[in-house]
Figure 1 (cartoon, rainbow, N blue to C red):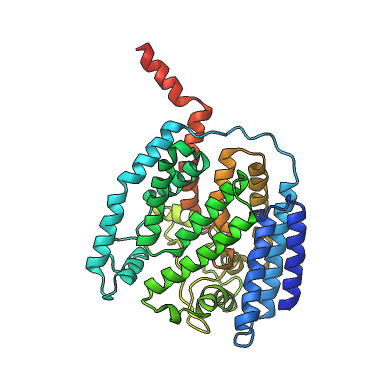
Figure 2: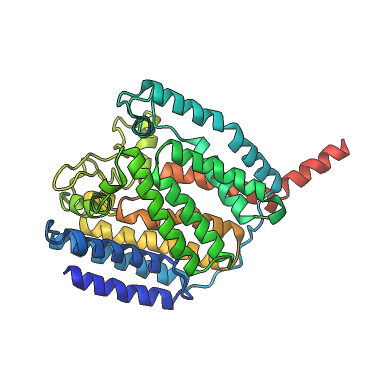
Length: 398
């Protein structure tokens, strides 16, 4: 069954590229690539050690087919030209200044994490603190600061001017420092993916540049893992792929459909969280950090299918794969039309596709995604409605 899925996903990749102007960043194309890589990794490293159920293969078939079908259908439609184009220079300035002003907060976090750390190894103390374990912070470090760093980086790359390249350098350093200090590989991935999408859509880079970048990114992951876990380079082996790629598949096999305690509590976590915060309901929202599965591979990620399968079984996997695929297909088509806003929006959303092999980043983190969208759209809205221009005219009139 694994080999059948591999062949089927290669077929979907071919169809996706054919219908997307050979754009590897199309939802159908990238989704197929992700799962081809995952299955090849399993055949290469885990097939003789870990057995995957027929149920998992069936869910993967539904999931990838649904995303590809939904995205290809919606990206084939005709839409009006996007109206949001250039972000406000004033708001970009504010974001860039805020990015710099927020840096002391990051360094404060690092100091508290090191002082309160109990492992005796600074990189591991930083990582545990970022996860909210023993840092002195009530919650994992992040929130609004991260949104500003991320959006500022994307806007500066989108509006890059050679004579003002210092702006992009500053924005990149701020966002990258967050990833380095929190020892988070996902931030480096975020920077790489967002950067590649923007530069590819602007026709600055081609596939050969992306391929070179992937090699550098993989080496960066190895180095960061080595530093984080105090390992020698010779100790970094196939176990990384086994833990972070194959482990998600084996963990999914431990799940039971319709096993959620309350209806849709994982898929609609934002609803439960809102009602609980407003004291309308006494049902606490489920923890976004899932329980650890120790056997056969230690992991707490269960692929992006987790919330839908646990809440609604196979029907949930089918329905929500089509919903997510449709949204991504619409957004991809808008991006192809050249609007800077939609290119930026797609760049920050692409992590949903890239990380689907590990976890759901769309519904589970919907609150954070909405905040990120608001921070991103503000500078474009200001330009569209000439808000700052009107304000300046009023000031001159007074």
